[in-house]
Image 1 (cartoon, rainbow, N blue to C red):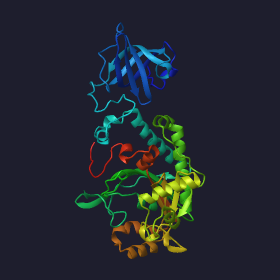
Image 2 (image 1 turned 180 degrees about the vertical axis):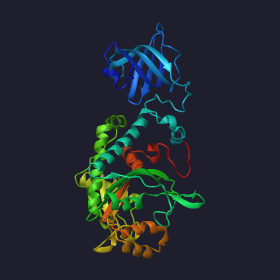
Image 3 (image 1 turned 45 degrees about the vertical axis):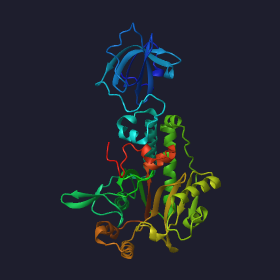
Length: 428
């Protein structure tokens, strides 16, 4: 007999046999009847057990994987209007130990440390699963949008010989007796691969050994990286970013509507044109001094409020950051090299994306490294590629966990990270 998922059960013909497989979500024993709620990846189903009916073995405890074979029976009060009666229940594993939290409750009221310490089971809760369903749908939308625009998915090494940017904090590892580093970004590789495929993207982990112990930082996170060649300037990159975010939102509606409803979140609308501010204007709006080199979290919040008030938008792009305070591969504005062709996308008052047009000429790299006091040798294999014809290009990177945290309104990015890594946590 083929397996019937709980989502398919409402379409079953009353009286026909069905076979469910899932976990014991909850068991309620009353005087004349018992109710077993089975949970699988698609939802919940109700199984009715009566004392005069053989149910197989003794009912397993909550969270034990089981198989239930019984009869589909109409009942308006059951989930989806159909329940399973006359069941035979068979455990598919050893009896599960009592979980640290009661997963059958509508909400988990445990503290964050408990949720993280027991992530292997707490992620089974339907609301927790719904959070990652948003992430999975976003990834699908990210990929499908770029695939439809002629991009090639690539994967770059996560062990590298030097840091992406001199002076940045990196994780050093022993690589056969010599030092290597966990990659902070696929930046160098995606730029070089523009010289092969023109348009590339990557989904993968990046590592930042920055001593941040905040609600918005992780030592390892999933980065959605994009790079495209043959561009005129960074505004083309912003247009690509807009389409990618719109594709992620569309995929959430298409593939994760159940998660949106379960979590009660407000999915943003992506405008046809994102509001754009120069960095100088952004400082004025945020009430920051004109010589500030970057935007502080309070400035980002102020700009988020401005974007909503002035444009009804959850998004605003800030471009033209001071060149000296952006990555050395950022292209300066030809009209005024003090400002760069770099940008950030602020989503609901928080920086979500950084991007830029990049340098693409070898001599420009050599000069920039010298001006910043960076040694040439650690970047030689990267910079040498620009001797061999890399077109004008640019790109951006989206932090997946930060995106989901803003979607759900999570107070801490760890709430939406499957197994977070930070200053204190290396397990589970």
